[in-house]
Length: 106
Figure 1 (cartoon, rainbow, N blue to C red):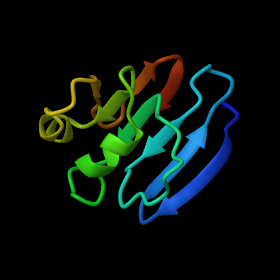
Figure 2: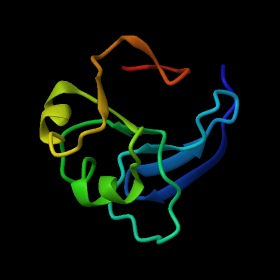
Figure 3: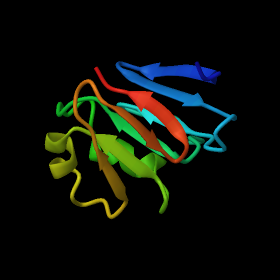
Figure 4: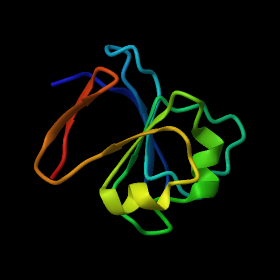
């Protein structure tokens, strides 16, 4: 199991965490209604499903940078076509490694 630090709830279903072991510092899950102005830019953004309160383009714009990878199901990836970032489609019950971060879907 990998060690995580700085897990923060950002409201609703949104979380932010870091993993210093992989060299990727910043991860977001379901960014929505992000009000802070000092948000760090994401290495990875995980979007769990296609609801507007989980895949908000306005909030994604606040946290991405050129090399941010967006990780989501195919229906969400199709909704994120405006973003030129790399996208990783995921399916249930699979394991993945993106930017040296290992994770599994359920």
